[in-house]
Length: 285
Ligand code: FVH
Image (cartoon, rainbow, N blue to C red):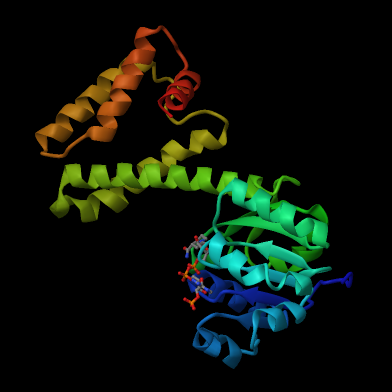
């Protein structure tokens, strides 16, 4: 199928929290939208807004040149689309289901010989942000499929194409999520240190502005912790955080681990934290 797909039909497979948000954004932008979900009642609100409910995965695929899948995981995705691969031939599959780089590459290798343009995507947003300025989505895989689907993908959030390697979007997605979980664990630790009664003020007044300020240098190519902050000074400060955490009755396992590795790095005479830290993490793995 080689039609120009600007404002053309799009199918969404999977209407969980995220798939429903994607379909709603496409409908709002005026794309004729066909939807399919295992539990069909999840399509009710979208159908009321103009979506077409398909009776089967194959019917859903056949309705549109671009098929967006947003399911729980790869086993579910494969269980649904592999039997319907014949219908997918000549169409473009944009897979926004979370998975690993290897899963994405393996699926691309299975589908591409069948004439299916495969693009893997990593959604960097929560459902309520889809279609808004804060949402962005990473894509990699078939450039042709990405270009053809682009008008629809632009409706979902900023579209960033990373290259023909189908695993790259997943790699970046999971790396970004790992940073988010690292930050979340630090936030929980900080909140526990100050205690429940102070957390309501501490969070918005101090923690959020502090994290925003510390993120800014990363955007300029520097690690948040390297500018004007010698490692020896940081190691001493980290030891104080560990001691204060213990003083507050808060276990500091993660920080103790960081302190040990930072002290090792200082003792070894490094003045740049990142390369030896990456080496240490790789060795531990
Ligand atoms: N929600 C989020 O904030 C994140 C943001 C970043 C990207 N993730 C990924 O998006 C995928 C879908 O996430 P979701 O939030 O829509 O997840 P659920 O609401 O749990 O919906 C899951 C859908 O998968 C369907 N499903 C599950 N098992 C099966 C199965 N055996 N056969 C067919 N479909 C299945 C489920 O159907 P139903 O339960 O409604 O019948 C939903 O459509 C995910 O990869 C996130 O990591 C979201």
